[in-house]
Amino acid sequence: MPGNGYLFVYETLLAKIKQRVLTPGMQLDSEVELARQLSVSRMTVRKALVRLEEEGHIFRRSGIGTFVKAPTPLEAAGQRLEIGIEASLEGNPRPFSLKILAEAQQACARCNCNLRLLSLEELLAGERIDAAFFASLEPEYFPQAVQLARRIPTLLLNRITDLPELSYVAVDYAEATRRIVRRMLGDGDRTVLFVGSAAANFGYAPRMRELGYRQAHDELGVRINEELILPGDVDLCRQLAERMIRLRPDFLFVCYEYLVTYVYAAVESALPRLEKPVYLFCFDDIVDSFSLSRGAVSCGRMPFNDMCGRAIRYLSGRVRKEVPEETIHEIFPMSYVITECPFLI
Image (cartoon, rainbow, N blue to C red; front, side, top):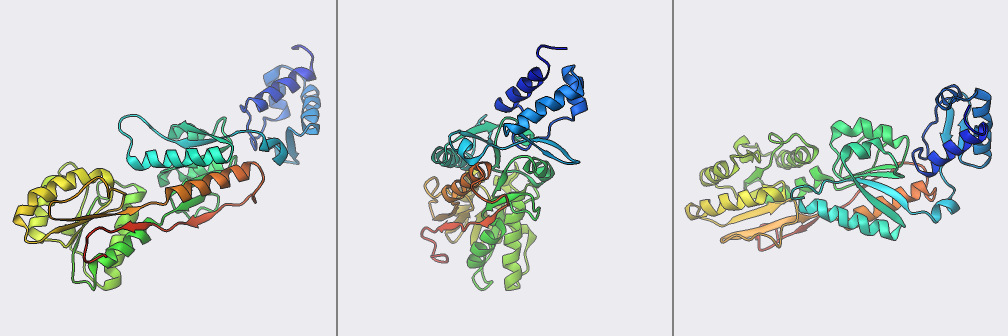
C-alpha cells in the first residue's frame, strides 16, 4: 500500500481538485473504484473523503454520489476564472468571429476571468475550465452542450433553443430578417433576391434567415418566386448575374459578409444591362467595406459588445454564486445601417 494510507488518498484527490483535473460539480468515482485505482482499502478512501468534505472541497448526495464543491464567493472572488470559448484562428477568420473574441476578452478582463480559446471538441469536453461560451454552436451539438451544462455554467451566443438546460443571449435571426425584408417588399410590389439560402448550408444561421425571408412574404400574402432564392455555392457569380438581368429584383438580401465579394462581382457585371440601380443589404456589418458604382449597400449590425458582456457576467456570476443557478434566455435587438436607399430610409 502506498505511503501514508489515507493521507496519500487525500493529497492525491486534493491535488486533482486544485489542478482542476476534477472541476466543480464533477462526480468522483465510487469508494470501491477509488480504492481499486489507488491500491488502498475502502476504509482508507472513506477517511480521506471525510477530511475533504470537512474542509469544503467535496460534498455528498445520499444515494447519488460524491461531487467536487464549487468555491465559496469569497474564495472565488480572488481567483481568475477560466472561461472557454470555441475559436479557430487558422486560415482567415471571418470578421464577426474576431469581433466576438475581442468583445469577450474585454468582458473577461472586467470580470477577472481568463478567456481560453479551444476547439469545439475541447470546449464540449469542458476540461479545466469553469464555464463554457459557445459562439456559433450548431444544433446537432446541443445534446452534448446539455450534458456539459449539467457540470459547469454554459451559454450559447446567437442560438435560440427550447432546451431548458441551455442559456442563451441572441439576436433572433428570423425576426431581424423578417423586419428588414418586410420593409424591402413595401406593400408587396417590390421583389427581393435572397442570396445564401439553406440549400447550400444546413446550418442554423442560413435556415433562420431564410425563414424570416419567407415569413415577410407570408405576412403580405406575396407568393415567393423560388428563383429569387439562391444558395451561396461555387456557381454564385454566374447564376446571380443571370437572374438579376432576367428577374430585375429591387433588392438583394445577402446572408453573410463572405458572400459579398462574389455578389459584388456579379452585380458589377450585370449593371450595364440593368435599367436601375442595385440596392444591396447584407445581414453582417460591411458598411465600410463595399460600395456599388450604381446603387447603395446597407447592412445589419450585431450588438456583440452588449451580448458578450452579458454572457461573461452571467457565466462568471454563476461560477462565483453571485447570480441564481438558473438559465437565462435573452433576445437582443439588431440595428440596421441604411445608406442612400430611398425605400429603406
